[in-house]
Length: 234
Image (cartoon, rainbow, N blue to C red; front, side, top):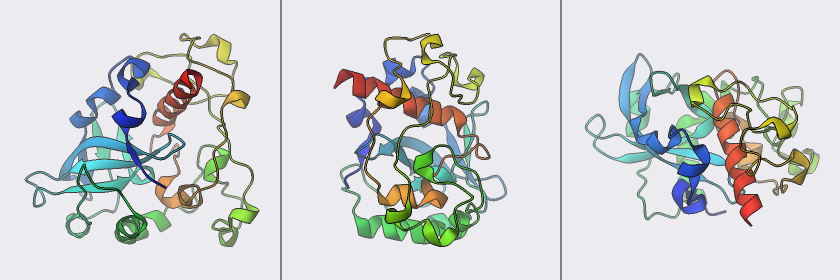
């Protein structure tokens, strides 16, 4: 499955997000274990269904100046400080990540090398609650998570937030009536959103699942809004 840069997949994402928070993704600094700065976020990669999968991180002068990928689920967001934390990640681990470039097609081999470095962190997230059925459920036995035949149908369970202002003021996702959303033209009901086919990312909750513990509720709100906007335009 090819991955897409945020701007390529959502050409009008700046207008959709309105407050400019994601437009300034480059303002987020990335920190590893012990408040050790390891780079700055510069882009987001999304899959064919439009879901956020990786942050593109420029390590700049901190680690050889290379660019690497960070699975979105492993990033803990501090929106007030424009910081992204990767708990338990060391600078040494970042040094061993494969280099990513803007013209690269992220293939299966590259992703496997990325996941291998992050594996200890991803395993530590296995018992957490993730948003949405497409990220599975914590009450499902761990041995069934990787079996697509046992997974429930995938869908979009979140809704756009009623507050489309500053990302820091937006509340957690709710299942409320979407007619209360300020931007009614871009908000559509959950049952109208297209369902996407099960993929590797949906199986790998430890790497890609969005959860409240990492402060992903606001990020998920933006993801759902972008998907709704693109679907409406198509």
